[in-house]
Length: 343
Image 1: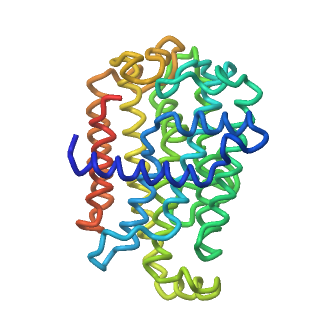
Image 2: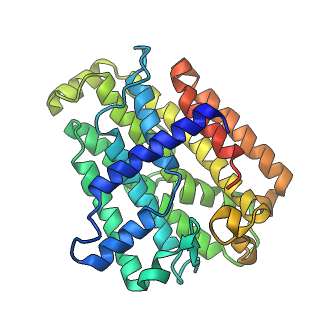
């Protein structure tokens, strides 16, 4: 692994863990069972990729034009932690007997195996709720918080209720499905011969939507810092954005493109690893997607084409960040890591 990427991953994971430790209830807080379950899954050894992507996007956008890449905007660690809470909630629910029925996650027994199905379900619910509470309390202007909550909610949902202001993907009142919509399509697609259209739709929703939201919401927080809006009232925020109407949509659209490309590449690599690595190497049960006849990239395109597609998507993701110049180097390095990883 590139030493710079390794350092970035280690420092980002450490900051995320420190923030999660501060935000999550302790194991001694009543009711004990649910808080222990929340902590069991949250601190099971995840890579913290999504919060790191969020923090680096915030850092990159807030530093644009200043030449300073060192300062992390206030609230970025908390936003990243909230994203990790939602990611962990999705894994807890994913592993339940009614869904993927898995007893291993990140090399440890899954939440329902240790605490039972009822507590596992509620632990996932509680993590999602705490994530939104954390975002609502971010040290940012109200309009920035609303924008973050809106994008975050869309990424988690089923594909209805509004539109993204920076793109043209909305049709009528429908949006591309988010994480939950992708999970539904994945469940309903089991046992059926996967098609290219279905597998791409599932991957963009189930995995790609939250990765994209991690990057976009980090950018939204960074925009506030770059425009020195964190101490201004909401009216000043609207006025400042109105003075530069082309800047924010262009920045967020570029981040969204980067996230969509990198997110799809990430899931393609996950599909490849599922059929090429062992359970010990993955930290979860290998081969389950093939056994369940799930819609995966290798099932449709084969291994070699899948590897080629992941590489091509990362190249497209890099191109989207061209306007940011050298400030985009950390995000590009992370994207490259997504396709080079072996677990």
